Each structure stands twice: as C-alpha cells, then as structure tokens.
Length: 145
Image (cartoon, rainbow, N blue to C red; front, side, top):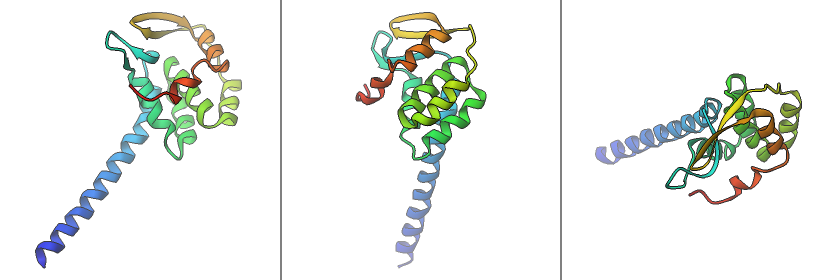
C-alpha cells in the first residue's frame, strides 16, 4: 500500500513538473522570437528544414494567450523579431496586428532574410509591406517539415 501511494505521489509531482516545464517552454517561444537574428519561412538551408524563428512562431501562436505573449515580446525585439511577431499577430489577432502595424516605427534598417539556401539583406519596410499584403500567411497553415 505504501508503494502505491509513493508511486501515485511521484506521478503527480512529475506530471506537475512536466506541465510547468511545458508552460515555460511555450512562454519562451515568444521571447525567442523577439531575439531572432534572421527572418525565414519555409525550408531553409541545404536540407530545407524549418527555421528556428518559424518553429518558435508556430509554438507561440498555438497558445491560448498568443496575442498577449506576442505583444509583450514586442518591447524588446530585433527587427527580425518584430517581423515574426507581426506575422503571428496577423494570424491570431487581426485587430491587435493592425494596431501594432499602424503605430510601428519604420526604420530604414536591412534585415537578414533566409530563403532556401540564400541569405540576403532586405529592407525592413519592404518586408513590412509583404506582411501587410499577406505574403507569409500561408506558411503557418502548412504542416511543419
């Protein structure tokens, strides 16, 4: 009987640790997006793997409080992080997206962009225009690779 109780308690403790670890991981996805160094969707590199930024964005937009997490992460973003967050907000909360988009500073900075095996620099403003036109909307609907 003692063994059964100990196993049950251990199971409860382990399941609670698993839940808190998952929550921490989910919250960190939006924070990781904010720190993104490059902007990439679709297969990248020779193997055509999903970029870390896209992977983090997929995790972030699946959360019940995705809009709040993404908006909170905007406080400390790189230019690439801002772009990812805008794509995510456009996906999960169009009103919040439009509000952020309309109030966003539009620097003349270039952003590192990865498309397939090609790494280039593209103007932040040009990428904003592509987001506004919905050019990245379909990527999050595709199954992950």
